[in-house]
Each structure stands twice: as C-alpha cells, then as structure tokens.
View 1 (cartoon, rainbow, N blue to C red):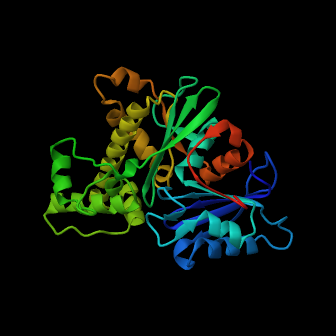
View 2: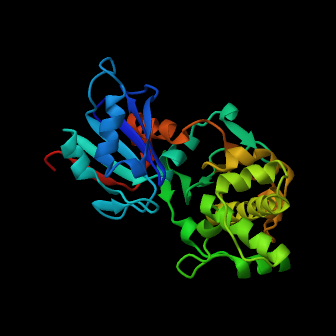
Length: 336
C-alpha cells in the first residue's frame, strides 16, 4: 500500500513529531519535534524535520502517513487546538510523494496497542486481558483523544471517536460545586474541558474557588501537576485527585461502550507523569463503579502507555502491516 521510505508524523496542538520508516518492517527513525506555533503550515515543519537528518539520512520519502489531533472529515482538516490546516494532496505535491494519508491521531495509537509489549505499559489495577477482546486507547494531553481497536474476522478495525467532545457532569456533591465554578468552553463542560492540560488548570482554579471563595485563577497545567505531586499546593493535590477519578470514570464509560475486555490503554502527556497517583487514588474505584456491570469492570485491565512517542510504533505498523487494519482516513494518491 505504501511506497518506502514512509514519512510518519504525529501532529498535535503543541508539537509535531516526525520520523521515517525506511523499509517494510523497519523501526521508525525519529527526525525531530517541531513546535506547531513556529511554522505557518505542516509542510514547513516537515521540511525542517527532514533537513535535520543531514546528508546521510537516507532516501527522501516516497509516501506519508500523518496522524493529526482533529477530526478527519474532508480533504482539508483543521487541527482542533492549533492554526494548521492539513491537506494530504498539498503535502503529496510539496514533497513529490506517491501517496499521502491523513488519519486521526488515535488511529496509530490503537494500531500500536495491537502488539504493545508489557514493558511499555504500567498497570493500574489488575493485569491480563481476554484474548481477542476489543481494546480502547485514550489520552489527555493538549486535548483528549480516544479510539477503539475492534477485532473483525481476521482483521482489526480502528474506530476513531470524538469522545473528548461529549458532555460530562458531576458524580457527587463536591464535584457539583466544582462544576458550578468550572470555566466553560463554548458554554459546555465536555470531557476535554476537564481531562486535558487546560482542563487540569480549570479544575485547579475551580477547586481553589470552592475551598477558599476567592475568584478562580488559572495557572499553567505543568505547575498544577508539580505542585500537586509534591503537595506544595493542597488545592493542586485535590485537583489532581479529582482529575484521576474523572479519568477513571471516563475510561470506564468507554470500556462499557466498546465492551473493551482486551483492556484500556491510557496515553497522552499527563498520565505518565501521574502514574503513582492513578495507582493509589480513586481511578480504579471510579472505573469499576458501573453497576450492574461492576464484576465485568473489575476484570478489565487498565494501563498507562509509558513508551516514548507511542504513535510512531502504530504509524510504522500501519505502513508495514496495512492489510491487517481497517480504518478511516483521508487518502491522496498521485494521479488518482
């Protein structure tokens, strides 16, 4: 399906990460991380990444697979949390490619989950999974992404979702107070409003307001995480605990939605930093509290993906084992 070498990219709202898969079955060869804000468009970032491989970097790419943080619903795709517009045809023309494919950013994470090694995971709760069961991958980062990997005959169907844009409400009296204080986004409180970097900042501001009565004031998400982990800010610690419980609840909802007996895999930039909190806090309790299916939920494993750049592994799998997977994407081919 793909002519090698294949350029692969994981393009988020903050950073775009690029690598090259030189031949079928080869591991991705990382190029660079480019800040989206520093480039006017994706082609500019790709040129910068390719330039950094130097003269000995190998042959120029002949095709590309780009995973983007946004809904892939047409020939031109606007990133959800950045100014870039991704157009497979333009990238193909700019780099003289044979083909260019654009997919949602959680498509390759789901593909990578098909063969992820145990040492690339940190379990949160029980281990093991039902062979052949569906799997869910998700992750809070700049935004919130989620997809499912569903066995279908001898192939694996990857179902992209916009779960981050579904509404979410409070589960107890304290959360109800926090929800009243939460900053809304376009007059909504969605999963992404809460379970993302900006969402963590919103949670901290709301928790602080509920506890002190002072006006909500946001600080940087990284500062909330650090202050919560080292307990230098009790409101940040409480916000992190709440973040973990809500994440567990949403993970459980998605596990029920897809009957993900094969497990739930959490990626994104936040979860690997708060693994101990997820292991020791209320994550699993919230995940399992799904009566009348609590017994089934207790048997579903949840893990944090700790491998660096997990999308690259999945993008390489899509490049080399494309016949294994069924997935939606924007496809451009020369002459088609």
